[in-house]
Amino acid sequence: MRLRDLIDGLSSLVRTGWMQRGVPPSLGETVAEHSFAAALIALELGLRLREKGVVVNPERAAAIAVAHDAPEAVVGDLPKWTAGKLGRRKEELELMAIDDIREIRLLDYSKSYIEMSGREAVLAKVAEVLATLWKAEKYQDMGISRVAEIRRSMEDSLMKLLSELRRRDPPLAEALEEALGELA
Image (cartoon, rainbow, N blue to C red; front, side):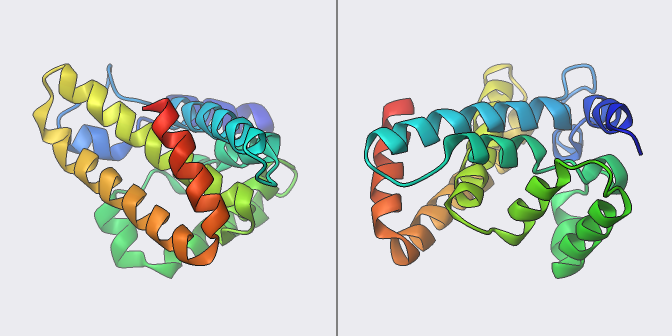
């Protein structure tokens, strides 16, 4: 796979969850759009955290966020139900995809995301959840009510992430909650 093939694949792959909840494919967010939004959010949050004295690399967080779903160009965008049934196998499948297209160097950032290694990967995960939450809110504002389930799920995921972070890295959690409040 070449980089241009990866980009084309992610740019044309509409996220499955939206279509399953009635978002027309013509309005559906692609994996590339989602990854770009997550990267911008990760960069902004990282810059705000750094201003608060948190040791974090905003650019690395953004790179992880932009590449976090890159394996989907090979694996596809699996619905949440399928991913849940696969459990750890989904991550193993994505890691296999990364190994198969090793010539694309940016996939090392995808691997960091899958393995949740470091503050930057955590920040990318928070940004990914926030990007999905904001998109769900936009679709609801457009009158697509069936996305409410995704919105609730993302709100729950964000609370769970922050709760886990409070336990594992209290200074990061405190600064991140403050930064999220500033973005609200």
